[in-house]
Image 1: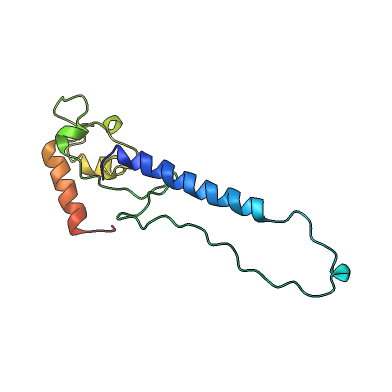
Image 2: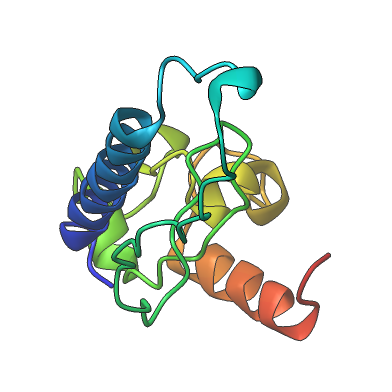
Length: 131
C-alpha cells in the first residue's frame, strides 16, 4: 500500500464508522411508553441491516498513539528525504518500524542509518518476527 493511499483509507473508514454511529443514534427512541399503558406486547422488530465495508486486503491501521511498528517496505532512497545518503529519525514516519527501532538499527550510533544498517535491521526483523 502506498503512503498516499493509507491516509485516504483511514479517513474513509472513520467516515463510514461515524455514519453508522449517527444512523444508530437517530433510530434510538428518546422516550419509552409506560408499561401499564401497553395492552399487548409489541412484536420485536429486527435491527435494520447496516452496510459493512468490503473486506480490506490489508488490516486497517491502528489510530492509537502506540501503534505497532510497521515496515512500509519503502526503499532507502525514498526514505532518505534530503538525499544526503543517510536517514535520520526525523525523515521517518512515527509508525515506521525503523523510527521506533532507530537506536537498535543505528549500529554505529552516529544518528544516521546507512543502507547497510537498514538492510541489516530489516533482515534481523524478518528472522525474528514479533520480537
